[in-house]
Amino acid sequence: MARTVTASELGRVMTEEIASRLARLNVLGELLVSQAQKRISEGGDSQHSYPGLWENQWSYRFGGRPLRDTGAGYLALNSSSERAGSNKLTVTLRDGTPDHYMVYHQGGIQTKGPNYIPLTNKGKVGHTRKANPLKEGLVQLMPNGLRRMLDPITGQKVTTDKPPDFMMAWKGVKVPQRKIFNMPPEDLADIVDTVKFAMTGE
Image (cartoon, rainbow, N blue to C red; front, top):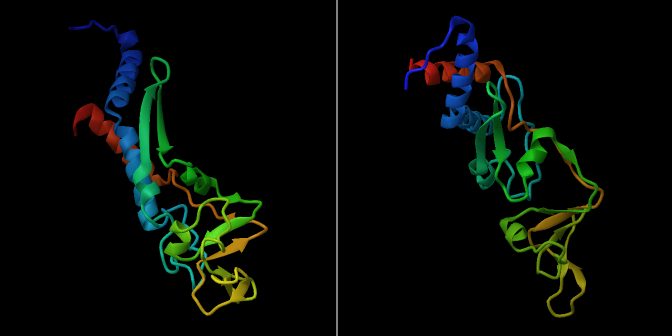
């Protein structure tokens, strides 16, 4: 249906139409997800570089890339676009992981401890929260470099030559900031181009 718009109304009507179309298509939301995933894949952007992983020779993540362990957080990123008034649009990048751990990386955190730190895949999948990892048959790396486990016969703690599966950070750990969302110049330029394309198809 045709609509007559006066010159004085043109700016307002165009703004409302742009906000409505962008919310309906969610192109900006999809772009934010794409930009965040690129940032994770490349370990940062032109304004922010990811600190390297904590390097421990026993860790299964040694030499790996931050936030790309299983790719669960990377794949769980999603977005939404909602009208906020007649001429405004709210675009949200969302962390779809069950415990929202990607949010913690956005700003970085310091935990109080104690923290269980898996060093092997066995230590990661073989431990149940709040259970005693030694009783689960896992090998602990001690601060002095020794490794210990429970003797399967006596149930006593003994040193071992087996590779360690975990260590404990009794005083907590510091997780450095690795921004999932950021707005460096190249991302802002992508947003401008995306809005232009959504409106004109060019």
